[in-house]
Image (cartoon, rainbow, N blue to C red; front, side, top):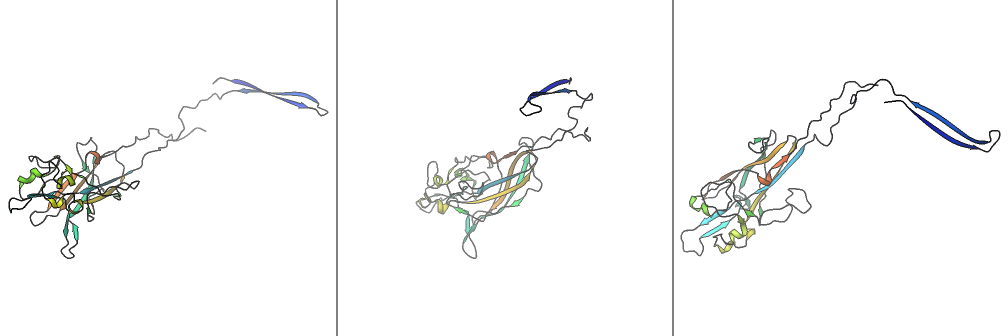
Length: 285
């Protein structure tokens, strides 16, 4: 940096003796830089902001099950009946209790774009409460409420089986409703549909049992659940692995299920870059 000069003047009017008159005062400045120099970035601090924290992953869903009864005789007026009930009478009180038990959830992570998945240490398996059976369909979140509060109205839903099948005869599997993933390969499943349509015989549903027509509150149940995975810091794709059991009845054994969230049920957590700004040990005065 070269030397520089600067002048500054001030005018003063004085009407009093003995220094009466108009006066001008002028200052002359000369700016001369030091001969030494300071290396750029020799002394500074580095602070990371807007990152480095953790995120909480919330997940909610529900368990549903489709039952199909095919009658081959007896002279009745119907021979095909669907239902989606999930309760049995308690052997002591007689009150309806949930048939969905032993439900567990584990958070899984993929760091290669979803090719491989591994359980996140310390994030499950967590036991989920499925004792609260919702009748008339599935719950929704309340308007303006907290995610997964399940405080909204109960609505019908599209049933799409994804956790396998059970029953006495594989010949009836073609009557079940599924888009395919998670189900045995072979049967020509019916297209997923709303439970009210399925039970009311809306084509292509073959149901002809009049007693369940438009009767969601008697024949359509769900077992909702929710879980929170707290303090996630690692970057990657996350999904939830859920296992459990739906209690059978006198004709059908217990049905276990093992599913993972996919599509809209996968959460991506982005990491933050490490700051690249080494701090010097000493700073010039």
